[in-house]
Image 1 (spheres, rainbow, N blue to C red):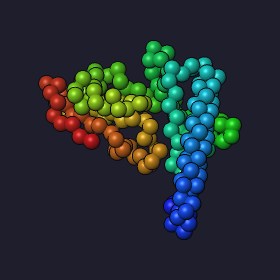
Image 2: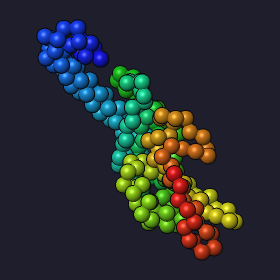
Image 3: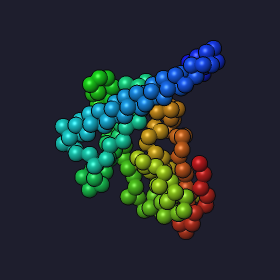
Length: 181
């Protein structure tokens, strides 16, 4: 907005304002990339120090807080069935274990849900998928969510999470009853 306002007040200096804006944008992107990389390394070091080397690390910035991140360390499936959730903050960044999440992807009902077209599309999109299964007499409910959106944008409650996909199956026949967002 500053570049637009400057150009509006001084049209002859429009190119200079645009160049300053692009330069500022490049500087911001480089700084954000460096901070992201440092947060990912801090998370990987914290997992390694705990004796759980991470196969993947996903770091998500917190909105409005450029020096605070949510991070997820995913170990190889055979090594650890859970995903470690970290809070990363500061310069240099320090990672603090906040929670451990069960993957839940090895459940047969989850496998059935993930074999559907919707399940495959969700796996393609999700970076840190986790699933829960609830078996009741009238239906089996499978909830698949991407942990990137757990308490990052909207604080979640047990019954709802943003970008969650729910499958309901008939427990007797295994037939898919419905799929909902």
